[in-house]
Structures are given as C-alpha cells and as structure tokens.
Image (cartoon, rainbow, N blue to C red; front, side):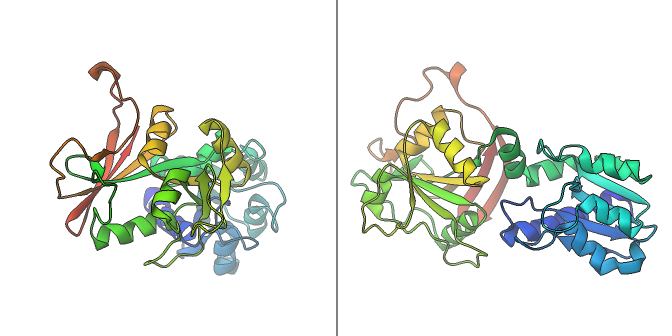
Length: 323
C-alpha cells in the first residue's frame, strides 16, 4: 500500500476516535503495514492509537511500517510512550503525518525513533491531518479552543421574525445535523439573553453522542433555566477563551444569539462559520440579522473567507466557511 493511501486510511480511523469523544486527547489513527492492522485513540484512560495497532499486529509488527497521523509520544503518560512501544515492537519504518506542536512533546517522539535506528518520514496527507486536528493544534499553540460559530438564517439573512420568533427556520434534517455538530464539540456557548428568551437545553439530542458538551453561558443563567448546571463566564471574550482552554476545552461551539455572534465575529475569534440557510424569506428589513452591532463601514473592510464545503440537508443548505 502506498504511503498516502495508508495515511488516508489512518485519517479515517482517527475520525472514529473523534466521534468516540477522546478529547482532550488528540484523535489519532495508526495503520501497520503489511497486514492492515489498525488502531485509534481510546478515551482516557485507554490506549493511544499506536498501542492499539501494535496489539492487533502482534509479532507481525516486527520489520513493518507504522503510519500514524500525529507524532508518537515520547514522555510517560497513560502507559508506555508510543515511541518506545514502536521501538520495542521492532518496526522498521514510521511514517508520521504531522509533528506534535505541544511544547512538552514536539520533536521528541521522532528523535527517539531515529535514535533507535528507525527510518522516519514526515508529511503524507499533512494538510488533511491539520484540518482534522485543528482544535488540538490551536489549543496546544494558543491555549484557547477552536471556535465554531453556528448560524441559521433565511435566504434574506434573517435569524428571527420582528416578534423574536425563530422556530423553526430550518427543517428537521438541518436541526439533526446541528445536534451532530454539538456532539463534535467539547463545549457549547450562548449569551444570557438567549437563555432568558429561549431557555435552551444545549444538550445533544436526535443523534448518538459519546458525551454531552460542557454548557457555557456568557453572563448569568437563572437558577431554574434548562441549561443548568452550566459554567457562567463573563469579561473580555479573549479571557473567556483562555479560561475555557484551562478547562481542557479544545473545541467551542458558539450558538448565539446575534449579539454574541457579532461580538465573536468582530473580535476575530471565529475559526469556522457553519451557516444553515433555509429556502425562506421574511421579506423585509425588520427581521433580526445574523449579527447585532456595527458591521464593516466600507466594502474594503468586509471580512472574506473561503467556502470549505456545501451540504444539502433536506430543503436546507449547510455552508462551512473558514478564513
């Protein structure tokens, strides 16, 4: 199997780990060839991907090539360091997707392998792995979570009618997908105004989830609100993200409303926008917009990103946008 083909398979396996809720561990996939032995990171206190794949391979790992999406760890943690396990198993070659940016780990695993005489190659499918591990990479380099801003609107860009009603803009398929999006994140955040107006639960429903995200309110939530128990935060948004990062929140889903969405957007703190568009029009300028507050004063100041994907969900469309 070619290096890129094997690494693409490792990326697919890593996605299983992410769905299993391994965060704050990075979701990693490993393939050992020949033989196609596979492993994915297990939730704490389980094994790392390399340990799972080596256990599946047994003696077949001797002289084999291991493909792993993230640099194997070299420091003791939960069990034997992965670099030491690969060395002990007698693998001949290790192909690594990307280096680990964690300052306590960066370069150490690769150095250990090379010091043991193992051939190490770096880089196949690196761009895909960086996208997949973006929350981990951002958290380890900035201390803050990767921020996804979720929005739902009519085709004329309105999130609610003039009377404040917004249920339901999108159809069942899009709402189910939005719950799947929640399940992918460590925490979900709304403003206190949304809690008072809509009393949301902010839990994952309608889809299977390995765990529920941490519920975060910007401001204060009433004692009897459905979002309770929750974490209440306030202050500058940068400080809020710093605090959540110390709580091992690697990925944060911001669900609004318009005031909170506008604040995150204007502060440049959004890493990904997920916009659900319904084939509907409110038909005027008195509906509520996606963002509250001042916008770009001229076209020269307009924020421009790139469309990562467009997905049809029943009658609705999901658009993922990044910078």
